[in-house]
Image (cartoon, rainbow, N blue to C red; front, side, top):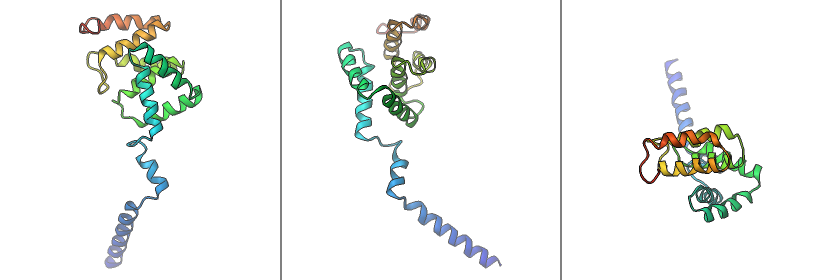
Length: 162
């Protein structure tokens, strides 16, 4: 009996090891979707970064590119990208800021943008002056409630942000 169980376990382990190495190409794309982005995703992220930049002219042109996706298509693509990024990826803040511009789940996304306005940002490669710029743009767009957050940041900000 023990020999039969041992042989079954060995056969099962062999089968599992063989199956885990062969992934059909249709599933392979799904497995690697998080780690690899297709060229259109890269273009979208580049437009997102430019839109969130402090260069008003470049930002306006990038907004035209983003708007050309159509609102629902843009929301769908940005949501997909948001979910595929790590929790500390600075693109999450840029996506949230763009959602604010689109008035898509504004309160939730404003909170994400404001979470970056800290002395030590929880997002990699996202610094206080960039966060302050985005929050300032929310203020200019009519969100007066973010003024208190900007004033609070002045306590710990450096000269570039003040």
